[in-house]
Length: 117
Image (cartoon, rainbow, N blue to C red; front, side, top):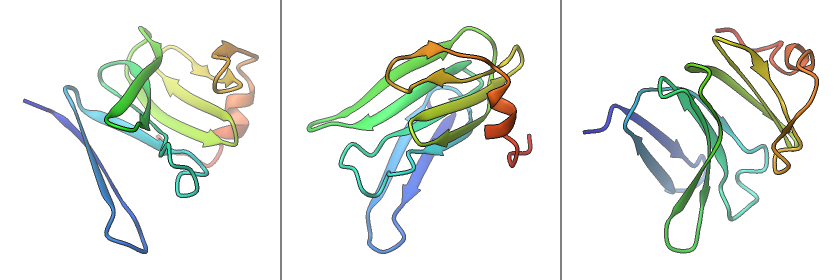
């Protein structure tokens, strides 16, 4: 049984993608270039306490856990190649997305300034 579901609908065609998760999903962020790339990347987070990068592959979808173990993910913001997220413990910002190394945390306030929890 699945408790969380993400559905992404295209605006100008009939393309629909549905993803199911075992735990409730609280936050979703699309790649800023989601419609331009074939990889169709997006991030999800929720009560499972994992920040997961999802991308479309040739035959199936690939899920990569970017962060885990600090409690539920409540909000995610994706700008350019950076992803910021907030949970119970901290607001985090990996730099850049694919390097997965952490940099100074105060930039999260700037990236998440228009997000309300």
